[in-house]
Image (tube, rainbow, N blue to C red):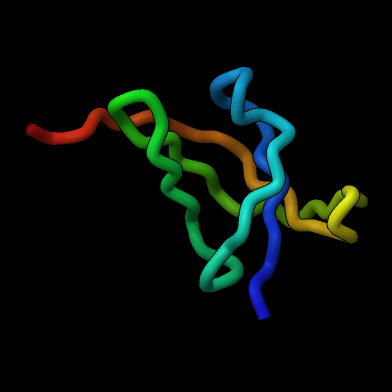
Length: 66
């Protein structure tokens, strides 16, 4: 079963988005505008349209290596 994450912080167009997490409990690395937004799992959960999801908090951005 795929877990879902609610993204908190980071770019405005990603904040509040619910995304799949495979495997659950790991850091998320989301491709975004020529780089990657990194999110770390928290112990918090929120209710969403897709049920209860784990909150992942933004912690850094890295650029794509050329």
